[in-house]
Amino acid sequence: MVRRTKEDALATRDSIMDAAEQLFVEQGVSGTTLQHIATAAGVTRGAIYWHFEDKGALFNAMMERATMPLEAAMQTLDCAAGADPLGHLRSYALCVFDLTIHDPKARRVFEIATLKLEYVGEMSAMRGRRRQHREQFMASAERIVREGIAHGRLKGTVKPHAAALGLFILIEGLVRSWLITPDFDLEQLGAEIVDTHLDSLRA
Image 1: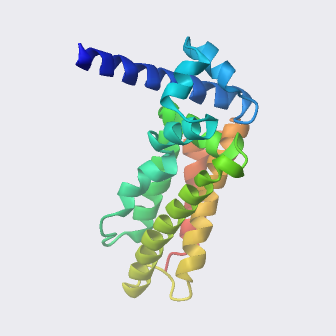
Image 2: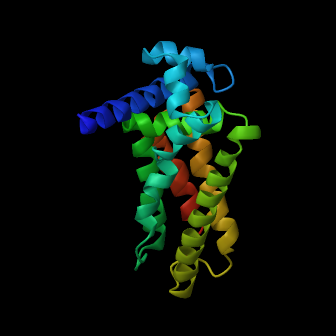
């Protein structure tokens, strides 16, 4: 009985976060109230307060359970680049595009974090999370670029920091642009744009 009660509570908590996630995408974080979320989840506001202190706590819990495309693709950069550093970086970009298109939850949370949120007050924790991810990407990408230069695969004049930051901004910008107006093929055109950037680094 106790176990069932705990399972029910977890199921209710998840349903509240599911409802919040959908509403945040549809009408923005600031435009969504706890009453909106309660109605969508089929619970009372009191039930929400039993699980979450306030909307900020609910938002942070919802985001903590999710992984955005740029974060989920990081595993592609963890191993050594080997003889093809640019191919390694390209694989990361294509993985991000694939997740954005084919993983609805990853796409929704990225859209919320980049287009539906003001980084102020109780929501400012998301700024730190995004900064941390960019730092992780930069460390891996700069390492790969330096290895490529050392092995003669990339031009000796390439600046690792500039090359890595340019790629990050390019990938994130393509995803944001596609989410705002999905009137282009993110996978095909995205790959072509990334290739143009990477080819400029090639020795």
